[in-house]
Image (cartoon, rainbow over the protein chains, first blue to last red):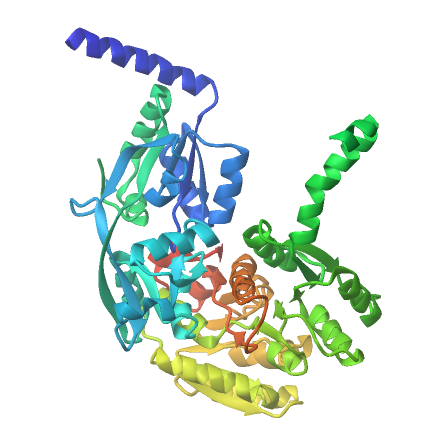
Length: 234
Length: 323
């Protein structure tokens, strides 16, 4: 048994060494956050030098590049990865021992009546594009909703301030950051939705990719993981 | 089939192509984009196109110096657009003149963006909504507040009389964030001595930052040189400007520049266009809204020289740094 594992390990190491001499493993990271994509990309390039990483801040850029040159691995939120069934989850991000987090509706001064969702506009961070995002949020909220998409987390507050939407649909961690930024009376409405955190997916049955990506994920430091909203990968 | 057999090879290929293409030509609704040339306008249009190109056909017309209202009329007559998008001041001004010049006052719904002080420009344009291009003070104030290691409660601004409505809106927004906008109103044609005098007076008023409005008169080369630079020489607090050049040049003027994110502005515009489409290609009530997204430039060097307490951990959220 031990011999077999050792044999496999030697083969994997050999394949990995081949990858250093041939083209590097390609990785796309799409995760809208307040940190600028080029900053996050610099961190990945430094921590994972054998991986060709491109970090996207906007869904349209990500989708375009995905069509032109599909990568060997993707780091993103599960709904984004699920759009590409050829990618299978290799690592699931966790925070405080949990793989998912609560999502809430955040509004100013008054809580949102959940029976009334069809009549209000809801702000979201765009992770899927216009039509798929509307379907996704409507399905989650159990009601056909009108959404307003933004590309950056920092744009959620102006949506509320300028009354362009009546609520924003965000994770609890984004809500906490919003509360630190704003002095407005932000109120969260519990909607009993929990969604999985960011994950890493690779094209199936590619040991070299899996090994390279595993090494990269293991090298991510606390700051980078914090930007990605996790403290551990499982 | 009988007909097909009678046609020669080339003719049948043409016929097949026509059958394939005609439904798209007939059924795809068209949006006419009137826009000025330039990278910023390209970005905004690109975002709108990225978002909606698989639902509508876009026809783009670049507005040049020679473009006339007749050209616009001809384009509209030929294209019969379901929506008209106006990008840039020139486009809005020309379309406004076109609307004034024609007798048929049934205009398709429109959306204007990337144009300064759009409220005044759209006052005489029918059936057209807009997104303002000026970044509201509250957006800048919240950003500066989260970047500094000290409270921001009062922000000063000087403005010309004609901007009174704009400033009042901004005062109200700032109040929502517990920030007081301390204002000084100037005549519409102030001298550099007046600007300098009022600026000096304003910065003595215990403000935590200064917000500089985009106004080509207040920010003329003469006024920058003779009023702003000398008045702000010993002002060691953040100066928020709306033009990157005022931060990036060695003027020692703006410490922080906040300008519109032109691509995100296009996404915001695409959302409004999609709403018009969903509303059966109609605007019930034209609306003018604030822009949502910004790009940020921080002159770290100047901030440090003025001992402005920047939270260095927040620099990852800044688009461009001058070190």
